[in-house]
Length: 208
Image (cartoon, rainbow, N blue to C red; front, side, top):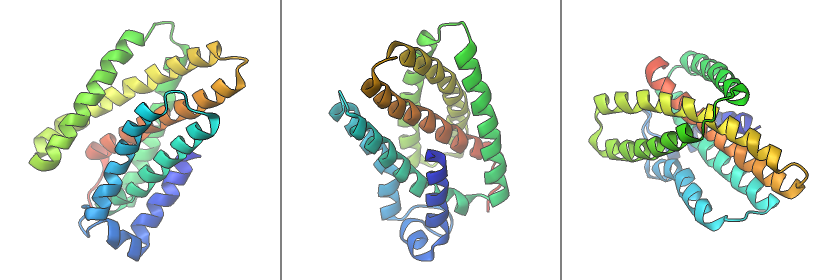
C-alpha cells in the first residue's frame, strides 16, 4: 500500500501544473518548497529515532504513513527527469531484485547481523556523501554514490528481511508489539526499495 500511495502522489505532483510548478523546475530540479519537501522525510526520520523510543501502535502507523506521503510527493521529480518507459522498466527491475533479495534473506541460514551493521554504517556514509554532492554537483561522484547505493540497499533488503523474520518470531503472542514491529519493518523495507529504485534509475533511466 505504501508503494501504491507513493505512485499516486508522484503522479499528482508531476502532472498537476500548479503543484508541479510549486515544487519542481522545468528541467527536473527543485524549487525552495521542493527542496524542503525532499529533505522533510530525513528530518522526520531523525526526529522519530529520538522521539519514538517506545512507540504506540497508532504512533508507529502515523510515522510510517507520514514518511511514505512525504517521499511519494517528492518522487514526482523523477517523472520530469526520466522518460515514463524507463521509470516503469526500472521499477519492475527493482521489484524483481527486491523479491529475490528478500527471499534470500528470509531463507538463508547465514547470520547477516555483522553484515547488516557494516551496511548501516555505509548507508550513513552514503547519506553524507550525497549531501556533499548537492553542492559539488560532480557527475563522477554521483556515479560512485549510485553504484555504492545499489550494493548497500540490496544488502539491506536481505538483512532487514532476516532481522524482521527473527523479530516477529520473538514477538509472537504480543499483539501490540507485533503491530508496532510490522509498521516499522514495513518502513525499513519501503525505504530500501525506494532508495534502490532511485539509484538504479541513475544507470537505467533515460533522461527526458
